Length: 302
Length: 249
Image (cartoon, rainbow over all chains, first blue to last red; front, side, top):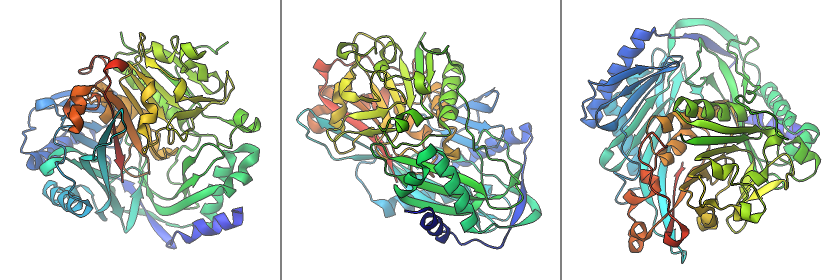
């Protein structure tokens, strides 16, 4: 497709409001993060009937790890406050005896999510919505290529944090991983809470302007062949929302971004890219678009 | 001490200029591979090599018997992380693109034979589509003592929300998760459409006449050295089945 068609098609995928509120994110001091993790573990105990009130706490440079009874563990990240509990159960134990189907799995996740009180963690001006069901499955074949029926090992519910009606884009905001009979294998929260009233209100750049920036970033990955690459795009999607950086990064504000996903068919290799571009003229949040250089390299090879 | 190796290709301009591929450059390649390397070193493993861009060669994974030099590189470490563009052939072989023809632009897994008398236990490839989920047996030949291949059966996204995947995989491993879980959970942010898969072989007891003993499989039992149980190598003569575990959504 031509660049014009690409930009038009991407723009049509987003309905952008004229303005979006800018919020500061809630920052928790170290001691408060520890208390939050204890609270998180007491919520987890509600679902698992396991007792997580005792643990071995170890502070690392960017996270604190808690070893819990029966091989379970919990972690919180100092930069973001993101938290995770993992049961430590081997992945092929507590697998589903039969495939109950999507609807049943979603019902199971909703019930567990309510019992955990997932929505209590979203902060002001916010809600949490179920976004997507994932399933982890396993299968096998013998040397005669006889293939057994796949088994469902875990179901994974991904939830999206919504602030002032907009999704907070990035990794799933909450994840619930269950096994057979609602066994809780893991639960995690990666939520950037809005703190108090908005600090600003930003005019939103039109989707076509954002799509133009995405197009430029995309083309730059192909050197002289940028234009040809556009012709090989097979699917694309663009969303508008607040942006959440990774859990190991500090973030002071919730600011609007357009996030685009592009898949293209190569001559020999297919590719999938994600781009994030600021949705306001004023840049409130810096997102590294450059990537890192390799470290720990040995000397150059001869 | 257990060892690991890393190869990561971010730029593919030489491959494009040579007309062997239309693949674009990546952006967050080294965020992921640096993160993985850092975490494994935190976990007490020794980095044997870390090659980048044109210093990554297909001969490093090609079997020595087939003219490659895997015994000095990929088959000389316990765990190997590679990131580059990937795909699979129509008969289920993994293929990975490099940015230099040393000696070829691509590796094909019909030329891999990992484990043997050497070291390799786990190979992790952050690359699209190196596994054909409809023909996973196409990878069988690579398991000559190798325990698990971790790859993808569809896309693996390059983007800002997958930049911490290497750290996540590494953290999972050094915190005691199984290799299979470390990969599937670590490369999934449960938002972008990443499609990881882990593949291993099993013996006759695991196949159990088609009533699979999942509990016996590498998928259920293998951890990073020093961070949990590691099953013994399974030579080809004892391999009765191939098993795979993946996420879909």
